[in-house]
Image (cartoon, rainbow, N blue to C red; front, side):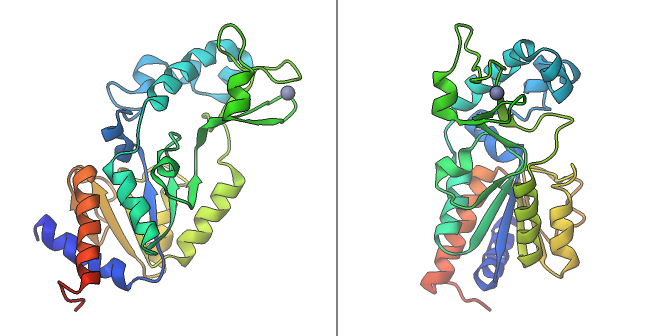
Length: 258
Ligand SMILES: [Zn+2]
């Protein structure tokens, strides 16, 4: 089956579905200029994970770990949502997608207009104090930066962006909501991720175990492919808008639902 035929099949699936959710990962933000952290040009090629990426490292030397955060912030702050993010937001606007669960911390789904977004790994646009637990939004965090550009809490401790470091738990609310969505879903679009890292990896399995459809949208086949009933392989900045176009065509009645 060629890509267009698969897209048409998936468009029909979406048009008939009760509750569609999306699970997204690094691949959807690559066209926005944010390399996959684990890729050759990604964050972890420049900063050793054990030295910079763990909760332990932050507690031991928050100023050192802030070098990595600043580099990350530079990449993320200049990034704009791309056509794939916008297409998912449009599917929500059309009443088809009910929620986006993302492993990305770049906040680009919200910037694209998606309203129901669960950020499994947190987001880099708010801050928390690990000493007194006080939380600060982006503007508050920005206004509290010292001369080195590192934000400090009222209590004097260095703030941490609300992104999940290795050794930290997934935010409880995001976890609870994501699994609730997966249990309600009859279709899950898995976009830009091979969904191999737990607990996000469990979401497609939850949907499949309840008889729902797993649709993979990745640039190449992944370990997820064997589980996916539908595979749309290609640049997500092309395939997602094209899928939305197919759904629109269905709604106009220019292609039949059967
Ligand atoms: Zn504090």
